[in-house]
Image (cartoon, rainbow, N blue to C red; front, side, top):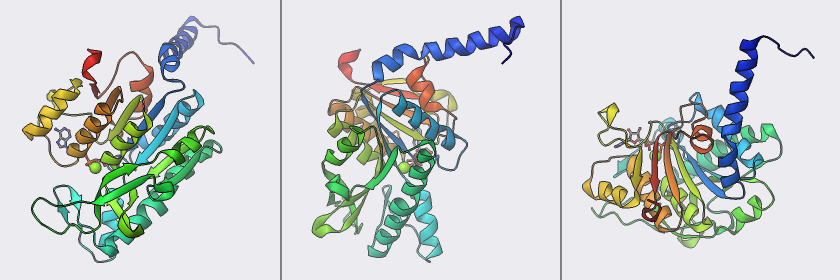
Length: 299
Ligand code: ADP
Ligand code: MG
């Protein structure tokens, strides 16, 4: 092997070493902790996806108990369309008749989940896929629409039993969770993946909850790119929810963050999952990216 000797390439190497070294205090802090990461359907298939998989593996190798929760809404809609069914949403919830539930379960558990598991496992025996129905990880109660509309098999998380997840993380494995929940009479229910991630993070006593989506973070005004909110408290998030400044996909993320932080999770982040290594940048460098929400008492 020949060692590079020119001063400029040595400087390059030094800079790389400094970048790795910068991660040391963060790795020390997070090693042995639990981090729940929700990867949204909106970021799937973007350039950030492969880098996300590598980041999850890296987290595992530095001793973080990482749990991946995934969405897949766009893929569910695609399959519905192929079956001649038109996706209908009420306040961001997909109206889910029995046939739609069947299709959603096929796509989320059979396809999206296994794609993630397969990609992570190119690095070795690490990922195990499961849905909320497995081990009664997520139990749903039917959601009642305030407008009286019939949402079908749409549920809210009523209970979380993280036993199965802990059994996996204790063995150094990475659980990958599709958020189909167990509903009444053993029937599958469609629960929002953001809400489920928040409830799981609280039940696991996670250190952090991270949402990876298709925007830089939370904007005060979605139409104004200069309005990214970098740091918030959980009270401020609640005020934003009450004020109705956020719409569509951001609402369940903010409610998930409130559930998690009120349930003891220290910090939550909303990051751009299209950006390569957004997760590493946030967790292991001094400069954060996206939106960070922290519990009040930390300030
Ligand atoms: P995911 O698949 O990651 O859950 P969603 O489409 O459900 O993605 O949610 C992210 C979307 O939330 C963004 O693409 C954006 O259009 C929408 N959104 C609504 N209000 C806001 C806001 N104030 N700041 C950021 N994004 C917002
Ligand atoms: Mg969403």
